[in-house]
Every structure is written in C-alpha cells, then in structure tokens.
Length: 431
Image (cartoon, rainbow, N blue to C red; front, side, top):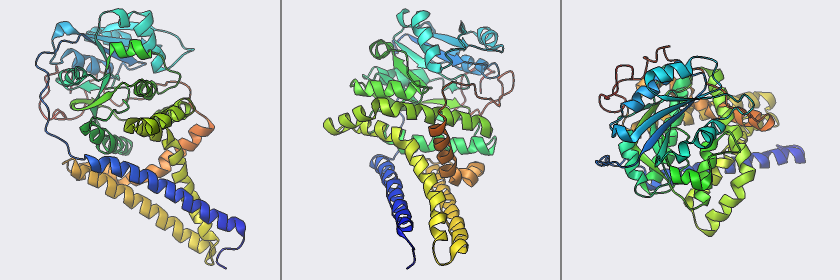
C-alpha cells in the first residue's frame, strides 16, 4: 500500500478537509467580487453640506507625520465653520502635541499608560472631554499618517445623509514603492478594496469600517457606545452597528492616503494587533452574527462572521503548507518526494498570489510594473498571515503600540501629488 497505517490515512484526510475549507473561503470571496466588480462613475459631491463635523486624530508619538494629517483636514473643501480638527496626543513621549497645535489642531492631551488602546483614547475624548455633547453631527476618525482628499467630507457626508450610520472611505496607499514590505501591504489593501469593499458598496451592503478614513454619525456613537472591549474598535463598532440594524456604507469617491508599514517589524506588530483583536471578537459576536445571517438572510452579518474566522483560515493555510510535505514523505519516494512537494507547493502558492495581484491591478486600470516589489513577495501571503495567526492564538496582543513611520520629520515627504487623480488643494506641507 502507498500509505502505511491509520494515522497516515488520517493525515491525508485532514489535508483534504483543510483544502476544502480553503476552497470554500476562496469561492465565497469570488462570489462577492463577481456579483458587482466594476467601479461605477464617480457620483458628484454634496453641494450643500450641512453636517457639523469633528475630525479626530488619535496619535501616539506621531510627530513625524501628524502635521500633514492636520494640514489636509484643515484644507478640506467643506464649509470651514462646520469643521473642527482635534488631535488626541495619547501618552506621547515626543512632540506630537506641540506639532499638532502648531499645525492648527485643537489638542487633547491624555496620559494613561495603564490603558493603552485607540478605543480608550477615543472614548476619553468623546465622553470625558465632551466631544460627543459638543453639538457635532458626525466624527471623522483619521490616523496620524493619513491625508484626506479635499473632497473627502463632501462625498462622505452626502452618503451619511442618505441614512447610513457611518461611511467608510477608500484607502490609497501613499508609499507603495518605498520597500518590499510597504509594496506587499499596499497590494493587500488594494485587494480588500477590490474584493470586498467595492463590490459590497456597489450593492448597498453594509461593510465593516477599518478605523480610519471613516465618518461616523454622532447619534450612532450615542446609541452604540464609544468604548470597545478589544483592540479592533473599528470591527467591534461595525458589528454592534450591524446587529442593531444600522448600516455602514462604503463610499469609493471619498478617498484618503494612508502610509503603509515600511519595515517588517512594524508590519508584524500591526497585523498581530488586528488578528488578536479579531480572535477576541469571535467568542463575543460570532454566534449572534450567524443567527442574524440565517434568520434575517443578512449578507453583511455573514460577511462579518467570515471575517472573524479569517485568523483560523490563515492558520489552516499554514497547516496545509506544513503537512503537505509530511504526507509526501510517507510516499515511496520518501524525503525526495517531500522535497519536490515543498518546491511545488511554494511555487504554486507564489504563482497564485502573483496572478491574483496582477489581475487586481489590471481590473483597477493601473500599471503592473510599478508594483513589482509587491508582486514578487505577494505569494508569501499565506505563510506570513498563517504565522501571524498562530502566534496571535498562542500569545494574543493586548496593547495599542505606535507604528514606525518613514516620513521626513517635518512631514513633507509623501506619495505622488496626483494620487487623488488631480492636484490637491492642500497647503505646501501636504502631498
């Protein structure tokens, strides 16, 4: 017999089950994409915005980039009397507060080393510092490395007035060619927009917001609360909104730049926080999401439940890569067969990732060659995220740590000036 013993047979059966699970998740995302894949003509921005908005930027040790974020918020094409810009300098050990104030923001200084999460910083600003009761109709949450398109609020506010509890904008990586890591991360971000956000947004299905570049109705915060139990306050708020019958709209016209991690250590820490947060959310909301998906035939609830399972699917993918060569070693060719299997598996995984990333660029109408760094390493996605998932399962992350930024100290370095499809109206310190 080719396989000797029951446990060898069990290994093959396990591999088949793991492969079926991976195929199922692939079919799910393909189904979402194929139902509404095209980018529609841009809708006009609101001509008469009426919502008073506070742009809130939580920042910890972000003196290198916060000036640029504040400048872009102050340069928005939106009635100036309806916009205020706040920076939460949260337990900073640098000049974030001074730089933000000099740039024109209203600075809220918080110091609580015992509770170091983005959600805690936002909850403190909304409740203890009174932003939630200050008469704002909505809050735009922005990361310190972001830059808003001048028309961002006009587009997002228009969708907010259509009845959404929140509006998620479209992220554009600002440094896709800086390093192999930023190139990889940029392709991952592009994949999320093309495979999930845009198709769901085209059909009016609620999405899970990503914690930045998002406009949230103040009433939604009052209804659902400002605090979170996990490190992923964005996903947690989105799920609470979904279960309460609220909708989070995706607005492809509301564009913002976001700096991607340029070094592997920062990217690893960032992904560890996100995956650890999703692991913490699963026992809190998974059953409720499945019940809503089944009883109300709610596609958004099903999508949220699937997202909570993604760390498990990442671990499954890594298990496949590890167990495949082990199973091959049990064949008559032994370790020679295992070596060939390792090469074949890695080559097929790399090639699959390469083809996937190239197709996304083509569908998006963007040139392929400028993304060569990301394309070379994108096939390693299953290995990287599998490792992150397994480590996070064993040692979940519990704190919100600052990410190293690659911008110049004065915040002047940035992505291409035409990233928004036109010359922005931001001041010289912007991109």
